[in-house]
Image (cartoon, rainbow, N blue to C red; front, side, top):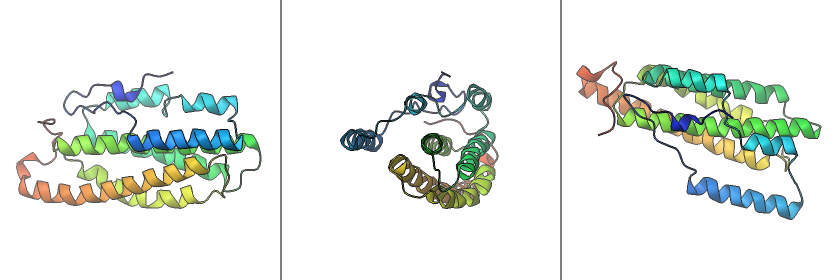
Length: 203
């Protein structure tokens, strides 16, 4: 299992260690209860997937290499997320067998975790006053397309919860990216000497 990217230190703009939010813990507890009550026990491959980092070893290494390049790092997260979106499309809206349903659930969960990591990075770099406007220019229109793909799969108890959580993560990413785009335009209009820099790190 690759070392989680949360533990990677950022030299100029350190990305904080991410811990599960109270909302995530509550949802996970609810999911476990529902599965037990309904008797919908997950197959072994899917249980293993839940414990895995959402990124491959190669993807983790790529993110590490860009720890001090905010714009490129955000673009890389966008690339990884859109790869999962493509894979969700390829599975289709009507997965028939259990393996395909489990695969869809796994990809939805990867999307959610990557979206949350992206949001953490956006917040950290913005707090550090890193100029990420170039990344946001591409990210904002891209995020608006994610929900359409995530909404496409037909309802199914195997992945309903993962789908709902992915849709929430997509919407919060959309909202955050749009808000940051506005706030960054305002900040760098008032601080022109800091434009195109990676920031000084949180105070």
